[in-house]
Image (cartoon, rainbow, N blue to C red; front, side, top):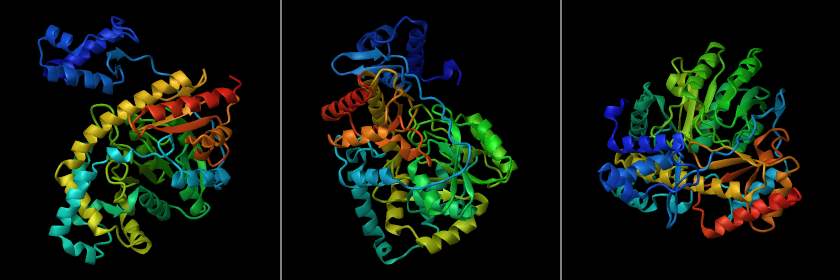
Length: 475
């Protein structure tokens, strides 16, 4: 966009950003107050507030209670690019996984940084309760109807409209409604693999995907993954030449646990490479709506012209965790997915679909997400600042451009398994790194969820976790 056509608040933000880049304002220095900027630029207070909010979203400044706005310190050094085992490995759930899942199900509380979900109070419960009552009054027959196996037509239409921004919109007929994203991923694996097949995965990889591979008798081939830009396409290129890999699973937008954002040109290359080799790409885009910048990053599916990309996502993490509504666009595998959905769970509850459709159509979802993104961005920045201050020197972490997860790499000598046990003994939870590998990798790594506001009690727990990590290293 040309400078003369930019909104005024963006012009003000760009001017301040330029002063930060030139060193006029240095890291840690206080910026002029909102009133001072308003007076100097002769603009409205609303314009100045929007400008500072945009600078916060860009990660250039931060607000400090009762003190004003300050230039943020330089970003921390990210973790190293992973160097996983070059051979396919079977996935076997060990005792650590079961201890972790038991903890999440029964004991996670205010001092837990384990669950990858926003806090309950950040969801629009009042709006959804009202919508649920309205839908029940108008469509009371939904409780007495199984509904269509492929999904409520109105919900499919609402979803299709949301893909217009991709530049390659889907039709309602391309959409299959599922019980969350995990069911969508499971259906995709069932459609394109057989037991014993090899599936290329990110390294580290979300443990829920690893459990799906294990349940289907599949082997995981870990591909080196950059904490900033995602899966290495050069490594994937080599790995997929032999024909052994039968599918690839990627989280291109703010991956779990890294928070990596694959550049658009990488997504184009990824789609083109796998299309040429007839290897299905299963894309998990459940974090795509949690962007901190101006625009939502497009998924790899936006560049799919042959139907080779099976796109999976849901509304559960954003606004509707209790409704468990997800969807998949399976491309040329769509008919097979429909048949599998019918035999696996028949349908997603029609009432839950109707509420989701109403929430989308009325604009409630987008309004909620605008606020939620700002809140999560602030929580990520606040958590990151505490980690930098409280954890051992030499700790590396990626600063994500979206999502609400932080991936930490502790210095040599650390053991996240032992740290997990020590933290649990004091009521503090996190997700240990080894859960994100089919082997025994990432022993020095851990994932922190920033989905909850950083209250004084949570900050104290986080600082205590850093102290436990320092003690483990002899500090």
